[in-house]
Each structure stands twice: as C-alpha cells, then as structure tokens.
Length: 581
Ligand SMILES: C[S@@+](CC[C@H](N)C(=O)[O-])C[C@H]1O[C@@H](n2cnc3c(N)ncnc32)[C@H](O)[C@@H]1O
Image (tube, rainbow, N blue to C red; front, side, top):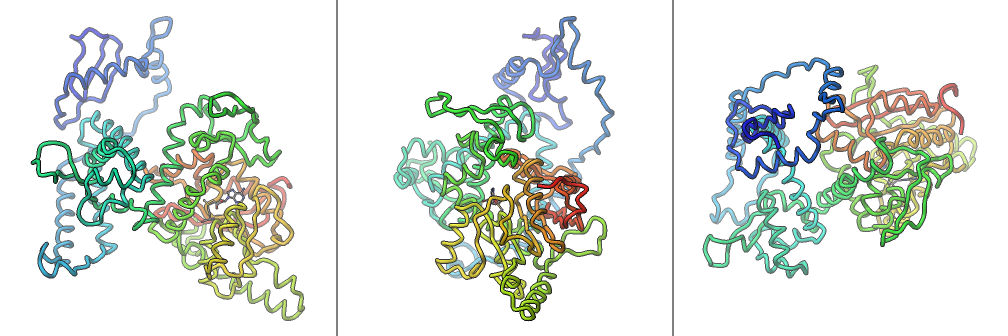
C-alpha cells in the first residue's frame, strides 16, 4: 500500500504517488459525490490486485509501460469542451416541447368517466424522435457530469439488471404481472413455481432500476421491502404473451450476446487473441464431469470448406465443438425465438434491413453514383421474358429455372415480401434454401395454411456446399443477413459457391448490416455479438474485399448509414480475381 499521506483520495481522484499511478480521472469541474471510506478502499485495492494497470516497473526499475506509452503516443485531438449549461438548456427546451405534445393529446383525467373507454393515441414518429433526442441528451449529460466511478458502477448495475430480467423472461414472470394493477410477490412466486424469497430478490433488483414498480400493499405501512409488483412502461414489453416479438428479441440478445461475452476470457485464452477464424488448433470437448472425451480440429468437419470454427457463442452454450447454428438446432425453443426476432426486425423500426429492402425503395445511397437507386423490380421484366421464352419454346425446364434463390433465407420473410411486391415473379420460380430443420419448419408453416410462400420450392441446402443443378443459373441469389455470421474465409467460401452457380447474366445481391466508420453503441454491439458467433460486421472495403476474393465484380454498393445497412450487387468476375472451386 502507498503511504497514506500521498494518497489524495476523493471519489474521482486517487493518485498513488509512490507508483506514479493515476488511478482514476482527475476530478471533473462538477463537484464529485463524497466517497465513503469503503468505496475508496475497494477501488484502490482492486487496482493493486490487477498489477497497477500500466505502471509496472521492469528489472531496471523503470516504469515499463509508461515508456511504451510515450514512444507510441500520438497527439490527441482536443475534444470540444462539454458545456453543461448549454446541454441542460437544450434538454429543458426539448422537455417543454414533449410536455406540450403530451398535453395536446387531451388525455381524460384519471378516474373520470371518459377515462374508462379512453384508448391512448400511439406516439407519432415526431414524438418518438423527440423522446429519443431527449433520452440521448439526458444520457450524455449524465455521462459527462457523473463522477467517473459512478459511471462505471452504473455499468456494473446493468449486469445485475440484465441477469434479473433475463431470468424473469425465462420463467415468464412478466407474463403473470397484470397489465393494470399489481400482483403480490407471493402470488407471482406461486405462478412461476419459485421460492418467494428468490422472486423477491430478483424483483427488487428490477424495482431498483425502474424496470418494475414495487409497492407495499400488505397494510403494514411504508416500512419494509415491496410486497407487490406492477409493470413499468418497459417491463410490459417483456411479456411473451402480449409482446412476443420484443420478448423474443430480448431473449435472443441475451442468448447471442451475454452468454458468449461472459466466456470471452476463456475463449481467447484457449484459442489465442485472434478474431474467430479457422485454424489448426485443436479443441477439447469435455463431458459433463469435465473429462476430455474428444479432441477436434478446427475446420476438420468440412474439409476445405471451413464451415466450422469454435466460437464464444458455442462455448457459452456449453457446446464448444458445434457451430452456432448446430447449437441453435439443439434448442428448438430458442431457435423459435430467434426466428421471431428475425421477423420482428423485418416489421420493426430496425432501419432499412427490414421490410422493403430491395423490393420497393431502399433508401441507401450508391457510394459511386448517388443517383443510382437500388431495386429488385427488374425481376418483373426478367419474369416476363422467361414466360415469353417458355411460350415460344414450350420447354418446361426453362419455365422452372429459378429466378430467385434466397440463400440461408430463414423462414422466408424476404421472399414472401418479394412475391407480394413483384407479382410477376411466380413462387414456383423461387427457391428458399436453409438448414434442414428450418426448411422443415417452413414446410410445416405452408402446410398449416401460410399462403405467403405457397408454391415456393423449399430446399435444405448447406451454403458451404456447391449449389445443386436445379438451383443453378438463377437471375439473382439473395444473401441477406448471412455473411455477418462468418469470418472472412467462410464468407468467401459461401460467395465462391454462388459464383460457380451464376450464369452469365445472373447477379448476387448481398444485404447486410454495415460497420459504420463513426462508432455508435448500437452498431458496435452488433459487431461484438457477431464476434460471438464467429462473424463480423463489415464496411464497404470489407465487402468489396470478400467479393474480390470470391472472384466477383461489384456492380453497385448502396449504404444507408441511418439504418446501418448496405446492399452489395455483384456479378461473375472475369476469373482473374478469385480461385475456382
Ligand atoms: C441471420 S439468419 C437470416 C435469415 C434470412 N436470410 C433473413 O434475412 O431473414 C441466417 C440464416 O442462415 C441459415 N444458415 C446457417 N447456416 C447455414 C448453412 N450452412 N446453410 C444454409 N443456411 C444456413 C440459418 O438457419 C438462418 O436461417
């Protein structure tokens, strides 16, 4: 421990002069909350345990990493100073605007006769945008003004909060909380078959963060922990019975994200500090008692096709030797939620990746020719030409040759949308490919009366394998939300197989999320989740590189920064860029 007399310690400042370590940031201009003794103690101790961050001395007694830092240092461009008063005034102005918007909705007074039948108007897009601006600004003010230690602690609180809502979601606890009124914690515990004390602890975590609203309704007065819970405006979205799509998105965020994130230290210490990629490193597969039962080599499953690499996701789910999609196949309930989440993205406000992408108007801008719009409406003409040719030659093979192959098309949301928007394209000219269990589900849906894909050819096909004859020569191969699940080597293999299936006039259309140059939390979160799955988000350069390596020539690149999505259109290259299959 450093000599206490050199240890200047307030909640935001702790300089350990003996080791020349600046433990935390200098105090901000805004007065820090006075720290309790134990707070300072624990933070200073954990710093000591971790080897003093970047101030270890080498054998010569020099401050080693300081030296490294000095030689590697580049001048930091000075960030514009944050003006709290200006930000707070802007916040106030926007808050007044929001209040005026809410007041203008003329909501009847609570308990008035009109209130009984009142259905609140949904917020307009302008109101939603205003709320988002206020929330963003409020967050910025909190981030810039809170004592740094408080900001870190709030991240730690999030860990407990996420664990709590995830398990309640899992147990369908939110479903049992009524949409109006409350439920006692005892009744909630009974409904989900759990200990009351356990449910109370988890509920209180959520009450503490405002996710649930707690109250004491046992007639024993204000003292004591909450006895009842009711929904907040957020938790009601986690009811699987009334908000199944949002609940599914939350389940998938946890399953695709948190499970793998928690395993990063183990993953990177086992497989080295590389992005997930195929290599020859062996992986050990343990049985439930921890005994090594088999040893697998990366990439061994598919020979050269490298469709398999260990991923943090698979490690997180306890199946390190399986590819993420194989893991999902073992958990049909999770796979169902995953499909629902995909569908929700299509319908929801997830930017241009959903809904209309490529079928109607895609709002992305062509990076080379801004006036050139992306659309798939040319397929209508292609369909008519095919029909004319069939009428002329009478050759059924021509008629049945595919126009569209949706590769890794999931439950067919994209194809269904395309068929609805371009009626000239007939379902029998479309092929929907995916893994066998997904295709089985599609077949079930069609049998069960889902009209949207009726007539479409469904095909279990592994996109790491060559396209079968009947799927060759299509006008377009659509690869939507697929490549981001894979590392570069695997993505190139998928594209190479499509290149080999292309006729002279066919195109490949890749529709994906895009890595934005200016990091935003949402965009980078997607990239981190993709790392769990062994994949990545890419920018224009990244997509062009993949196409080039696969022997494809890019004929258009459209990007929508707001929706963080892009479309890459390509055709068979002249063979000089990519190797043959
Ligand atoms: C993220 S989803 C995208 C689904 C669809 N394209 C969309 O945009 O909604 C990726 C899809 O790839 C499928 N998939 C994964 N591995 C595959 C493989 N080896 N061959 C074919 N499909 C695969 C998954 O089952 C899943 O439906």
